[in-house]
Image 1 (cartoon, rainbow, N blue to C red):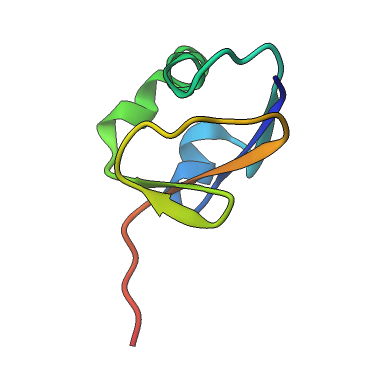
Image 2 (image 1 turned 30 degrees about the vertical axis):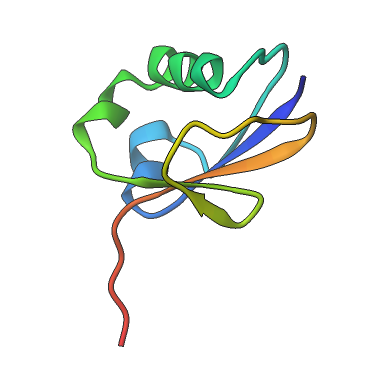
Length: 77
C-alpha cells in the first residue's frame, strides 16, 4: 500500500523534508521501521502521530493512501 507521511516543526529539520511518500507498506509497524531507517535521528525526539487527521495512541490499521503525520509537542494560547 502507499502511505503519505507529513513531518512538522523540528521534525522537518531532522528529516530534511515536510513530506515523504512510501510504497509497499504492509503495516503501521513496517512504516515506523522504514521511517526509522530513513531518519534514525527521529528517535531522539518526542512526537505524536496522527492518521488522517486523528491522533492515535496505538498502532492503527493503515489503508492505501492514508496520511500519517509526525508532530512534535506544541503549545498554543
